[in-house]
Image (cartoon, rainbow, N blue to C red; front, side):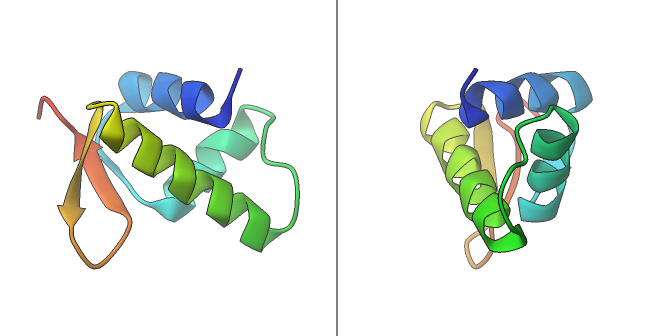
Length: 72
């Protein structure tokens, strides 16, 4: 599974607001949180952007990586 797929599963299951730290935690808990903190955060932000592009998430703050489910 890709980081995007793993994160999408967590987002659908848990719902709510998603930021970089929550995404890092979800990816790490799913066993794909390898690398140092900077690498983990970079992958998490990319996965959040990918999910927003796919329409699953909507960005709630234009100045930070904060998202929510698109259907909320």
